[in-house]
Image 1 (cartoon, rainbow, N blue to C red):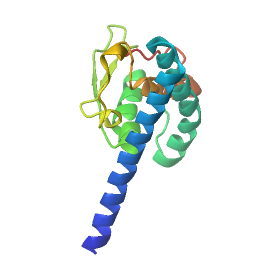
Image 2 (cartoon, rainbow, N blue to C red):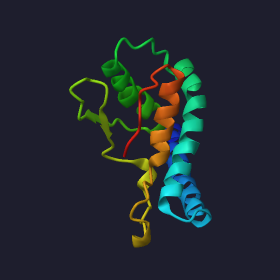
Image 3 (cartoon, rainbow, N blue to C red):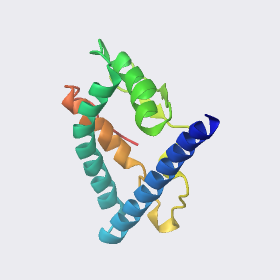
Image 4 (cartoon, rainbow, N blue to C red):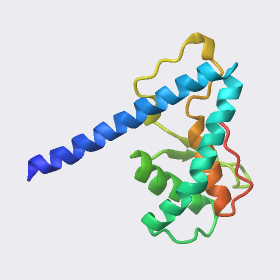
Length: 151
């Protein structure tokens, strides 16, 4: 029985590492294809947006989360359910704006940055910008159009 449990954990770790390495290869290729980091950042956001638009349906079907009553509840669901479900992490929610319409998600352990060292000539690259696009796309699909993802 414990062997099966270990296999599940090992498989999940291998999948996580494969995802991280594949994402790294994607960012590397984008850096080769585009002239500057700003263009790479835009592409990562655009790709993330397209993922988020489609991922929200999967999230709603798998999570059984009901309609959120306010933006704070939406933030909680994003941090405690969505990030946990797809990346295995739970970010902290901080920096709420006085109006309650903006907040920051702090990722203590970002799985996308394992095995990554950025060269000095890519100092303006927003390596995890894909995540901002995913959030923006998903939130727009559930009618939260004022959301903007800044890193």
